Amino acid sequence: MFSLNNLLLVFIGGGIGSISRYIATTLIGSVAGTFFPFGTLFVNVTGSFIMGFIMMLGITASLIPEHLRLLLAIGFLGGFTTFSSFSMETLLLLKGESFFYAGANIAANMLLSLTATWLGWLAARML
Image (cartoon, rainbow, N blue to C red):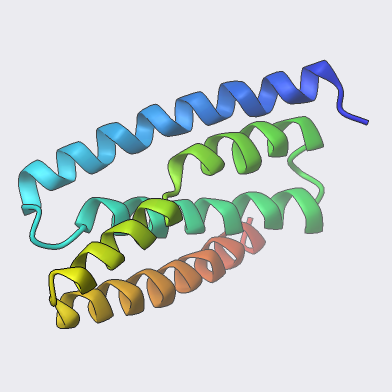
């Protein structure tokens, strides 16, 4: 059912994605500040775009083989995107009674990530 090669691809991609997430959120937080989770928003939107792009090319156009989809979509993007962080940050905003920022965080992550996935899909279709 699970091949060792496939598990290794997911493992390697996940590690690289997690390191990339840490670097991106740390850099963005140091530039934009921490009053709003801009780093998490960035990785969620960027990851959504990349997911749409990869899946369009992989499933519809058959241009990305399964082993690369495992490495990139499941591994890398699984480590890179941060909806668990998004949920915790939103909860902390709510607990701190920052209702405006909590709502803005929910709306921005949902709308921008869905839009980015669609744009990634469209970008891949144009190839």
